Length: 162
Image 1: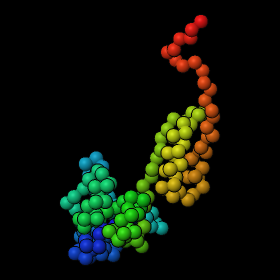
Image 2: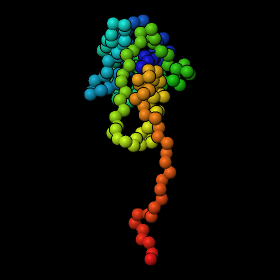
Image 3: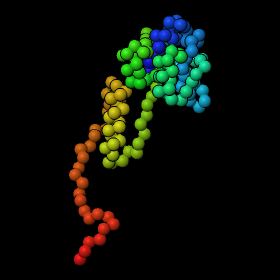
């Protein structure tokens, strides 16, 4: 997760230097159960959360991204959702020296003998966009099975003539 804001917002309201400075900023929070989620930070001593304020919150990351680009506040968002906005300068990272704690992503699927190729492809995709770097995380993704040619038999619902 990255904390980002538009340069125009930072010019008007200043750049926060510490997570505690967020109390005086408009933060764009992701709504969960009707309340904005806290911004989480990691330290050597553990993780801690900062309750955020602000007038605008939503349960759609793209809406929050667009609001941040429009200069409405500071957002905590997955890096892959703002790569283009960061590259173009529409957003800049704030509090980069205060890393946020990660939010877990879980992929639940039935564990049976034959993993569907589309499920394996999706798990592989998640691994790529989440940039997993620990072997245990990578090992959780099963190898994509080689596709086997399908045996062709009589079509269902057809009758053979004798």
